[in-house]
Image (cartoon, rainbow, N blue to C red; front, side, top):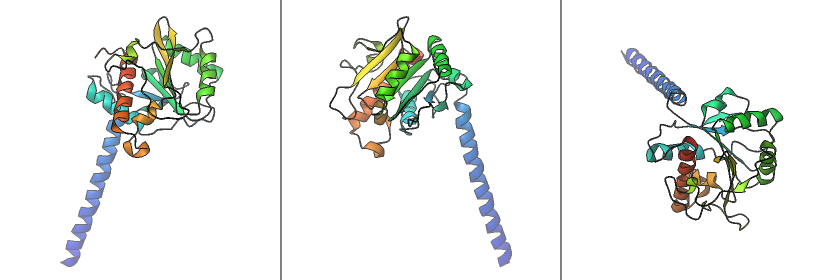
Length: 237
């Protein structure tokens, strides 16, 4: 009967749609589980206060994690995890990345938590996306008043650990005609905070369609990011 055939076709469509929804849900659940699997690491995207766009460069960290996974033996999740300085998730990520174009503000409680995180071996990478320089320098001065930002020497492992950068940070985007610089805060000889200035490193990690950077700029940015993560987790190659 025609009605029977139509009913079977409709039922098949419903079952197919249900199977697709279940598969999508399973995939999302698997990704969430992977980010928390023992032995699997990821990057924490810092959600900070002050009004700055902490969520900038949405494709950057997944692309960097993919590069880390394909170029090293480190087990990393496919996506970053958004963390705040007050959340328990903070202690699950070895590398915190923060970026933006605007103001950054840490409360006294935030600063205390961040000090604990860094003193216990955590790593903070602040990437000025052109506009956060004044506020991030102010907040980092509050973080460790006795440990000022200093330019990281060119012989430091972050520039040589996996990929060699004898001249330091790659320059991804031009803004004020200034050279890219990497500043840091050292705790007991370990680089605990790394600040990338006049570089736009995170922009270089983004999908090609976002900024249309030349392939060599994108590759240089990814290589520098791989070095940073490798250093943060104590990876030797």
